[in-house]
Amino acid sequence: MYIGTGLLTSSPIIHRHPANPILTPADVPYEARLVFNAGVTKYQGKYVMVFRNDYGYRTDSVHPAATDLGLAFSDDGVKWQVQPRPCWQWQDDEVNRVYDPRLTVMDGRCYMCFAVDTLHGVCGGIAVTDDFERFEVLSVSVPDNRNMVLFGEKIGGKYVRLERPFPVYSRGGRDRFDIWASDSPDLRYWGNSHLVLGVEDVPYANDKLGPAAPPVKTPQGWLTTFHAVDRDSSRGKNGWEDVWQKRYTAGIMLLDLDEPWRVIGMSKTPLLAPEAPYEVEGGFRNHAIFPGGMILEESGEVKIYYGAADATECLATADVGDLVKLCSEKRR
Ligand code: BMA
Image (tube, rainbow, N blue to C red):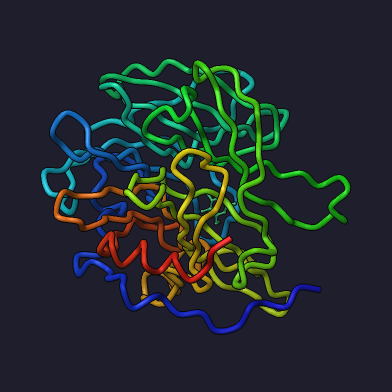
C-alpha cells in the first residue's frame, strides 16, 4: 500500500515558458504520437534536441507500437525545426527500442546517454556522434539500469556519470530505486560506484528517483536536476492507462565539484511539480515531469527542458543564482 506525499507545488523561482509546449507531434513531419523526454544541448552554434517519439499508439492501447529518436535544431532554444527523418534507430535483434536521450558535449563531440529495452532487460547506453547521423555506441550497461547522464568534463581525471540501477531482489519486491555515480577512464568501462541520493533523502518521493538532465557547473558545485516519484495506491486512471498511480516531479541538488557523488545541497521541496494543464491532463501518463536537458546561458538564465505527461516537450527557466540558493536548504 503506497500513500502519496500530498499536495506538491513548484518553486516560485522557476517559470514555465509561455510558448509551452515547445514541441508537439504537430511539429514533426513524420508519424508522431507522443513527443517528449528530450535531450537538449548547444552544439556548433545551435541548440540541438534529440527527442523521444512514441508512435503508432491508439488512445485505447497501453503499449507503445514503436519508438524512434527525432532531431531538431533551434536558434533560440524555443522555436524548433524538426529534421525530415528520425535520427537514429539501433538495428540489432536484441534491441527493442532506444529512448530518453540525454546530450553532453565534451571536446567538440556530442555524447548521448540513452535507455535501451533489450530482450534481456533494460540497459543504459552511451553513444557518440559528430553529425547526429552516425552514432557509435561506446558502452551498454548490464540490466537493469537507465537515466544515465554524463558530466561535461573529466573530474579527477575520469569521466563521470549519474545513473539509476533498479534492483528488486532484497528490496521487498517494491520500487525503491536510488541515484548512483560511476566513473570511467574511457567512457567504456565503468566502476568505482557511489550512492548519491536515496529515496529516503527526498521528502516528496516514496517510490524511486532518477538523474534527469546532465549537470551544469557553477562555482558552488554541480547543479543538477533529478526526477522524484511518489506513488499512491488510491490513484486510478490518469492518462491512457487503466491505472497510473505515480507522479513525477523534478528536484534540484548541488553536488561537490571534486567528489560529485557527494550531495552538498538539495531543495527539500520540488523545483517543478505537475500543475500546468499540459502536465496534468490529456497526456499518456498525466502528472509526469521528466527533465532531460539543462543549459546554463551566459546571462545566468538556466533553461530546463522536460517531457510533460509523456506527451509533449516543455521548457522552464530560472536564474542560476536562485537555483543554487534553493539547494542550500539542505547541507550534509
Ligand atoms: C519512466 C520512464 C520515462 C517515463 C516515465 C513516466 O519509468 O519510462 O520514460 O517518462 O516513466 O511514464
